[in-house]
Amino acid sequence: MAVRVTDADLLKEAQAALEAAYAPYSNFKVGSALLTAEGKVFRGANIENVSYGATVCAERVALFKALSEGERNFTRLALVGAKRRESGSSKNFDSGPDREARGPQKTGMYMDIHEDFLGPQRSEQAASGVFRGVRLLPCGICRQVLSEFAEDLTIILQAGGKIVRKKLSKLYPEPFIREA
Image (cartoon, rainbow, N blue to C red; front, top):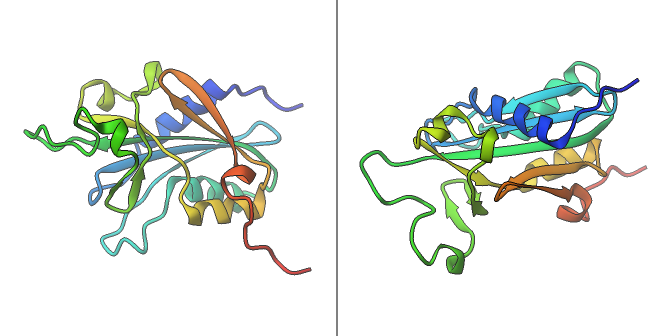
């Protein structure tokens, strides 16, 4: 019998994973938590590399950990992110009164979707003001890789204190597929 894992539980696991992120170049930490059909949770954190092309996103880290343990059935993936503030500067990627009017902004190799604190699940770093929480969605590469193993996966995010669910099949409706 599968263990019941709530969306809030999964977001807490993703937040815990975020603490292990290695992001010295973008200063953008991401944590993920992937849930199997049997109720196992696999955490992932982004791991950057100076070459950027060798960087691995948190979603793929969690997926590869699960796959390497023999798991193949996945139901949900929670995702959280935090951007480091520039020390001594009021200039942040998400600052300014016209933030909403500007829409999504490119910040290094990541897309800033919406600025958002993570409520009670935020990390101590976010609580201390060192990191700003952000809501984000998987990049195109992660969407493709995830779709090969879990096209019906639900992506769990937190926005404005509310839990938001997005179906991977809606975010990435026409993935590359293997020919039969």
